[in-house]
Image (cartoon, rainbow, N blue to C red; front, side, top):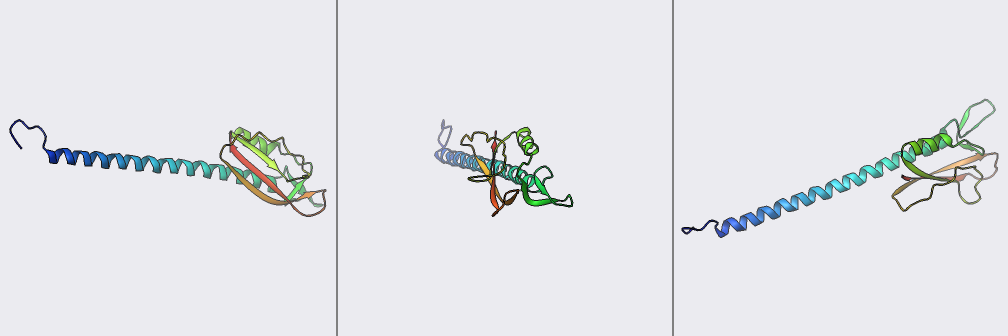
Amino acid sequence: MQKGQIFSLDFLISLVAVTAAIGLMIQAIEVNTYYQKEETQHSELRAVAETAAGLIVAGNDTTCVDATGQHLINCVDAGADFSGITNFLSSAGYSYEIDDGPGGSLVLPPPIPYNDEDFYEVKRRVFVNGVGGAPRDLSVKVWKA
């Protein structure tokens, strides 16, 4: 180091290297945080959709009742009351679409328009009480309102 010289070239090069390393570390932490947030949101959507589908195929408001008064799992009553499920989804801040396919025989709540948000869809194979034939595919699609 010469007289009057404040910084040496070695010090400046090491300062640049340390600054670059800190920048890369901060960027890696930011990317990791973003992916954790996305995974948390996806897990939340999955849990809500699975719960809503489970309530439809096993809830007392929607399932068929046999001659002894027992509720039958995976048998949905044609005139089922979906208000419990829709209230659950709406109050939790989710929009939904419940569909039983083309030519469906269930009286379903009107779908909320989908707005290209991330969604999670759960499909359940159900029988519809009062409607003969093969089981139907019931689809529950959920997204954040």
